[in-house]
Amino acid sequence: MSFLDIRHYKYLTSSIDRNLDFSAFMDFEHHYQVSENKHEYSIERSYFSYKESLVENTVDSSIQSIMDMESKLIPIFAQMERTGVYVDEKKLRDIGEDIARESKNKELEIYDLVGERFNINSAKQVQVILFEKLGIPVSKKIKTGYTVDNEALSLIGQKYEIANIILQYRTLEKLRSTYIDGLLRVINPHTKRIHTTYNQLGASTGRLSSESPNLQNIPSGSGYPARIKSCFCPESSEFSFLVADYSQVELRILASLSGDTSLIETFVRGEDIHTRTARFLFGEDATITSELRRIAKSVNFGVIYGITGFGLSKVINTSPAEATKYIDTFYAMYPGVRAYYQSILDGANKNGYVETFYGRRRYIPGVRDSNKMIRAGAEREAINMPIQGTAADIIKLAMLRISNFLKEGTYKSRMLLQVHDELVFEVHESEKDMMEKQIRSIMEGVFPGPLKLLVDIHTGANWSEAKG
DNA sequence: TAATTCAGCGCGTAC
DNA sequence: GTACGTGCTGAATTA
Image (cartoon, rainbow, N blue to C red):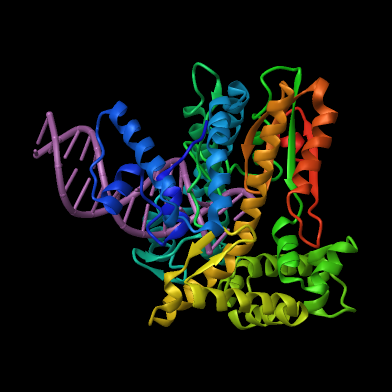
């Protein structure tokens, strides 16, 4: 059985808007109105996709393997959606009550400090309270007045305690509304499991996206986030959770694709990459404190994301000039990366698209735009895609191979979730050790670059424990 | 006129 | 850089 989606062909070979469902796509691309009848609709969908696959000239042979992979992945994602993931509903409710209690206290504390009640969830009302009633100096202007976002409140919080409490309240409300109430709403009453929808065309880099609910942005960390993640668990005590994630996958891919000797050497020696960058930025003899390492880590990530000095300055809380200096130093210390990035931009200019190691393309029409701002934005998109997209290709290939492996053995263990560089499984106790070995071997074996990819695997009674 | 729906926006979570 | 979800707000639509 082979599965096809006509949109894959167009999205992988042109720059048309990815944000279209099948019906909108057919209207836009072929001026064809699909049937409202479900049965006819599915026939139309199959027919047009199959027809498209037969027209060889529409498909550049260089992206045939990506097309083939996406086709084979369709039933795998479908299976994962159908399987879903079990959630301990009672436990989640209990955590929700704890959060609600703490949140209520913060709320009352805020009213007390301000001397009146207002809706703290309303950015507009917070603006009025802080900047008009309390007369606190304003910062950045936005369409609706002055921003009260995290950055602004953190700054204000240095002088006015009220801002800190609003931040704490916001964090709690975010957890409660999105991750407690939001998840409780989507637990399937029949299966008691959460069944997300994976969007195979979700991101322009080739990444998956997940919606209804989005299981790819469940909070991580200690405290409430860990407690929330611990609600995701096997349904039966005969199973454990197994989490396998690629270690530093994007930086390792960057090392392989750029061939930068300094980056490769750092990884080969097993050195801490963020500390290494920190010494480049702050001097070989500097004592690398956790703060300096944190800055270096942000620089490393920023470079992968094609971030600007301005963007980086927000993350590490310095001036744009200082942040730009860090980025420049990074390129000076890893010259292979600079050359590699330049070759990406040259390719984008020449071809109008950039591509991953496996030939997945992203069209970048903006690189030839007359507007300088648009060109700069397009260049960041171009830089970002080959790294992030290659990582996406790698984990998709691994999923394909793991799925085939699981099918052949008629095992009880199942693949449940994908979170960009991480795969989550529920594994039967009798298969646990063997699964760990096989999954690692498959995942680490996908990418042939000069630098080996490493996979961390942990098991535990739930998602939180198995994160290691 | 009141209630409901919708779209845009600000914000925050993940990798 | 790439996503998605929630709540608020004001406008558009419906009853």
